[in-house]
Length: 365
Ligand SMILES: Nc1ncnc2c1ncn2[C@@H]1O[C@H](COP(=O)(O)OP(=O)(O)OP(=O)(O)O)[C@@H](O)[C@H]1O
Ligand SMILES: [Mg+2]
Image (cartoon, rainbow, N blue to C red; front, side, top):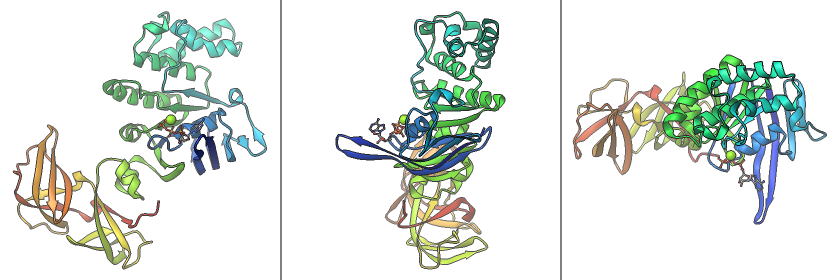
């Protein structure tokens, strides 16, 4: 089922004034899509989910789920009448009940007959691979198992839309990685529309069909994980997702079939220039550390070249984290573990025009 959010705004009154938690936010989650709101603490992610769940009433704007408007200036559908399930960061499962009874609870409230209830609870538990632990008291479970129970309980009512607010952040790193893929696969199998909230960029990249990057109650960019990483549209997005180098310059020649030139203090760089940036525009060239190759010789056709000196080279197993002084600027490069460049070596950094992105500078955010 589709989720549509149109011009949503929500402010909170606090002791020290007004906080604009959501500022005219709009987005649409397609049926069956795994859509993630990604952003730093306090950017409004939970407020957004709570508005969709009906736990918070927006000041302005409209929310629809499927064909039904659930929230507008004249209408507010109660949380239990919205076709949604919700999973939170804290597992929120009841400690005095068994796993089975935890999952059965929503069905009991809906007065689903006992036989069918049992069938659906076991079906939900098998989805999260917990059917063997059905009779276990809930407190005797690991964090990951508790979160699986919470997921089963959210799915047992067969909601059309599942809202997940940082469901993995209480778990240790290894379990988090395991559950990421498990949850993604499970939700795809069930075919449910998922709206996921996290501040963890790796999690967002690994799980999502599309990601909306939020900052101060607004969406800065909405894109697939790959687009977001390779073509960030704002400095904040580029910095928030992965590591990045910024090279300042001025557009020398604007877009000819997508490619142009940017003049920088390190020489002229061939880059894809957005159509909106004319000759003379202040530009910020974005290059990821892994897009840089290093050599001691200059020859490299059709690639941009920066000249510098290795300041630090730290061996990290799967790559070498290299810091290179280029003019006055420190540039990060990720080199293969077999590379052998001693600190102090003069080197050339190469990158292809396709491997960089250009943003306006100063960046309007
Ligand atoms: N009930 C409330 N009363 C006052 N201010 C609130 C309330 N709920 C949220 N806020 C404020 O609204 C802003 C957005 O909060 P929200 O909880 O949506 O952020 P978040 O993106 O979920 O952050 P986190 O990653 O830390 O969970 C914050 O500045 C927060 O302090
Ligand atoms: Mg939150």
